[in-house]
Image (cartoon, rainbow, N blue to C red; front, side, top):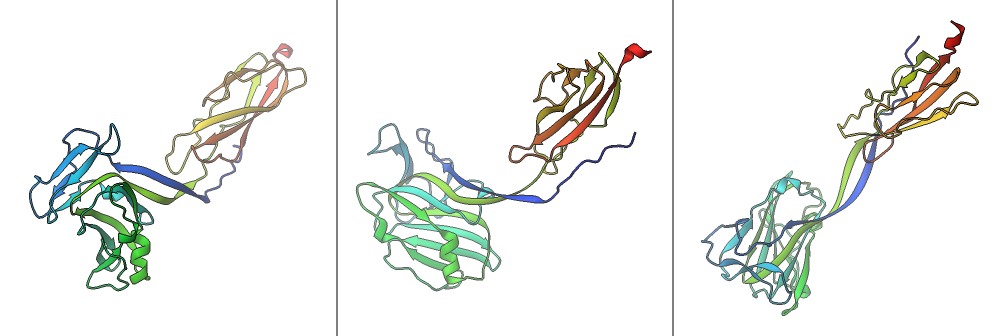
Length: 283
């Protein structure tokens, strides 16, 4: 018997996912271990109770001269995202720095208590003013769109990665997160329901989807369906969601079973297996 043909599509599907996740949360008492003092000691940074929100802890800095870097894995920061956080009662000389690895080298964007943006690049730095959005005495939701801000001064430059997030000033900060979109390339998985079979009536037929595959290595789920069977047959699949279901071929004739696999994002093309059953009573 010739091996059956498996329909395969290796064309990738581009899936766009909206992402939002907390990058740093100050849940533990006195825990400031994720911060590094760049130009001083750690005495002026503390983990304290939120003065406005019950059962919430925040990071508070009390020295206007010391810069603190958030020590996290920046490799997961996609370049089209915004860095957002909440800020309470900042001093007038607060500043936030985003360090970016770009095609043109290191770029540093400084966000500070200014009302106007600098639309020029001085060396490897540019400045953005966010003073208009700050209100004292309440938590302020801040969003730093560093990709757009760099594009204003270097439209042809490309961000490769985020290298650092640094804060300076007297302020409280909480809920630091990345928000944006990520484009993920995903390939359609391949369903393979194995070779056709010739069996006799009353045989328990073993099906197998073990040869199904996904080029991205994603785990697969299975969906079997008995498309057709001889008239009068009461054959049913033992389980339609496992990789190797069975059924009893109760009547002579042809049984056609379909397999579709899913990689968690998209279905495969269907793949059929044919089971041809002969009547063993004629022997």
